Image 1: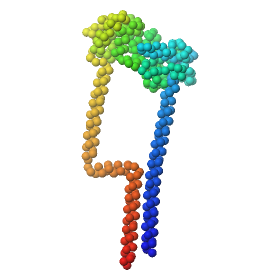
Image 2 (image 1 turned 30 degrees about the vertical axis):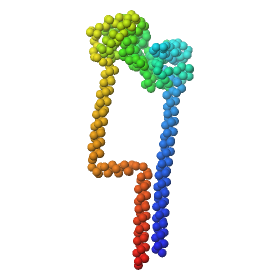
Image 3 (image 1 turned 90 degrees about the vertical axis):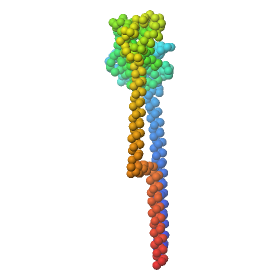
Length: 364
């Protein structure tokens, strides 16, 4: 009778342990399945989000303009588009009906660049101006395909018109911050703008000022209005652009003939009388600063490495604690394997106990 009871108990224990193991395996499978579902859902969400973001940034080729509240009594906002540089020129001519924008309501107007057959090609520089009935206007603004879906707005300030110094234009910017107002020297020698055209920098800007054949865009015209000498005009302009004495010396030496063909006499500038100093441009100085910053970063990295090494060489107790923490934060499978070993161990111990009691009873 006792053997039957023991056998039944042992069978029950084995069945129970099997159920525990099966349950643990099922839990593991459910955990894996849940993780896979979560990953798939995350991937789907990411794909949907990317698609929505693509739409939001203007895959359609539209750009928008928020008309400032100071613009009154105009019938339509208009869009002027041109290509800058060699081979450039007007794409949508000033005053053309093709530049009329679409009223989106609430002071927002749009223009579908690609939808109307235009394109902003990579590698080329483009500029635009927003106007009200081709009268009141913003200043120039650099535009590229990166601005599709973007919105231009006025910040309430005004800047000197780069063509006619007697006029002022509303300062405009893109909400995305991509591309800005082209930096240039105005007709009377002032510097306006915050972004260079692609391929241009401080040196090319000064070179153009000293060699431009357009009578309204070179140093001779600026001197008529600024009350400065030829020498002082070059020095002040170069200093504002962040150029050094050596930069200007090279620009003047390299462009004597080109300037002469534009009726500009660069021999009027004397390096020995210049107020400029330094042997490198502002851009070179920034490069050196970045190099120093990188060196400091490397030093910090070495310090962190030494610290980690000292920590790892700590007591055995810390090492064991770290190992325990790793096991605890491991996958679900490692925890279930430990549980299975304990269950099997308990079953085996129970079986040995039953066998021992059965043998004792037989001896009696």
